[in-house]
Length: 239
Length: 152
Image (cartoon, rainbow over all chains, first blue to last red; front, side, top):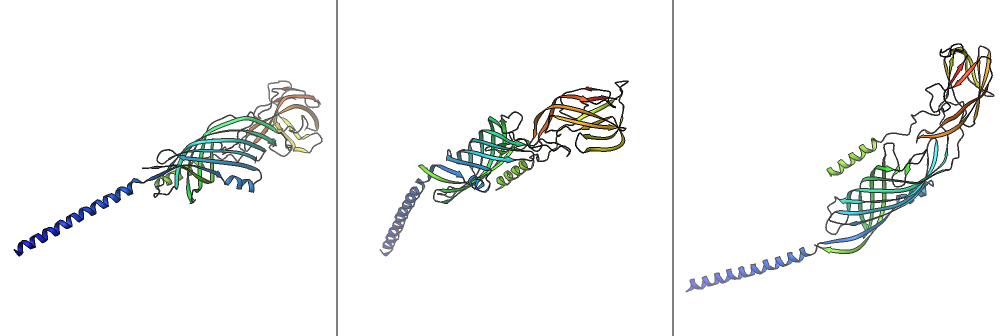
């Protein structure tokens, strides 16, 4: 009799535990499901301005320029980028002095290689651009290059204008963008450029191209920008 | 991280591979080359003993003591359209009056512009030791070939 009672007690106790444990499992599963539902990917247009150019303009009165940038996430870690700018610079070389004025547009893609924590939007990226620039030069003055000192050549105030010039080139770059305040990003980027083709002036050369900067003798160029940009959220996608 | 190092190295190599074009290595404004021939036999080069070369009313370019030359290179004035040279040989002086047009030709960033001379003519010469001359080319854009033959 007592043995039977003891058995019933143990069995009911076991049943109780098993039921309870099942309920616990169910709760855990529900929690997990709720958690995995909301992975937010925000799509936004980030608009910015290159702040290095106004600083250089302020320090060096020979160069004026402005550049605006914009980028937007397309798929996964790929961002479409556009950069627009203009420049008006005076360049002095050993035997000549010229002004270049013009605008440029750069279109391309950035690939973000940085693995963000959820909710962060920082970037360390590599990218490529196709760029087009249209510009004009004014040859302010030059001194004919004469060897020897018997005749000293006078400086010629030419004032010759070389208009309707253009150039297009490719850029490869790397850079980073860091969210310093909410939706405010600071970015720095360094690029190497290779000229594809350019319309050269007659009896002069494209020594400087807006957006390309100084044209080195094997058609290579380098550049950098330092941007401050604002993230303009458009819509969020949940995954 | 390895990816970025590769990229940095690549960028660095690209930058240092940029040719330096800050130093002018091309030819500058050409000089006028005079070559001296025998008047009796105009295919025969005949050296001349020169004492001095100068532009009229200007200092001496060079001062020699009867040094022999078969040709000389002299600069033309890039600020004027005429240059007059006085060449003294064995105590006799002759003056040659050159006139020309100028054409400035772009060379490179570091060299700037060279002046080439065109339509070179000899307006007149005195004939103390110079007996005749011949202009081989009226365009002076290099100084490797003789532009003017002088017979003496």
